[in-house]
Length: 262
Image (cartoon, rainbow, N blue to C red; front, side, top):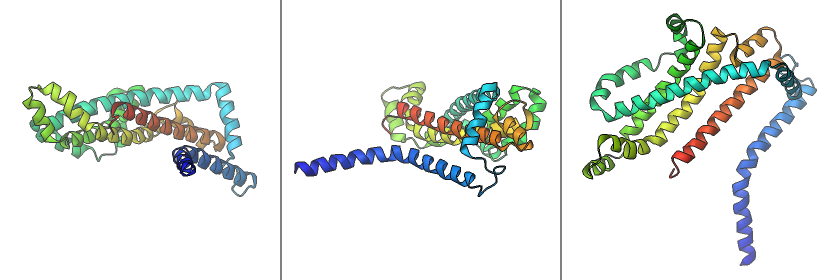
């Protein structure tokens, strides 16, 4: 009996650890295969540089300060734009979900504007705000706003009405009902919108920087693509991939903190 319990404990331990190590193992195998393909020149280096060459190019860009400058420019735009779009989207979504009048008047407007590709509005936004940081921040905020407001609205509508009636019956005012019943009930759906808009914000960041920026990861990728320096181009691409991963992990951590019952 004791030996069986020991085996069960070891199996349970491995089941917990394998998913964590599997991701790192998969990435390691991919990088090794990538390096082998490049070293054997199966694919020309111009089209697919080796990981070691990309690391060398990245180190060179760090040494010259070029990478820091472009990274910080992009981080400022995406953090500010994402924060504005997410905060405004959550507030408007709560209002639309809680107020029948606001729902009837503004929800059709939100759904009619949502399908418009936001990058198509960049020239118009540049006309409104001029050339600078504001148009790029605004286009990211717009891209984040719509998924967040729609998911927040859906989350509020899906909250059990019995819980709301119970809170009102026990004397809670509108603010307490929103803060203690509706918002916690809608949080899982809100975070689904936040995660969805994280990817959208990166796409809009790169697109905006390629069109109307001198600094930033998107502008850097476009610049080295035009010069056909693929090692430095891949540094930008991998950096964007890392940013997306960190963004997603950060939202998952925040979700675990705010929604422990999930």
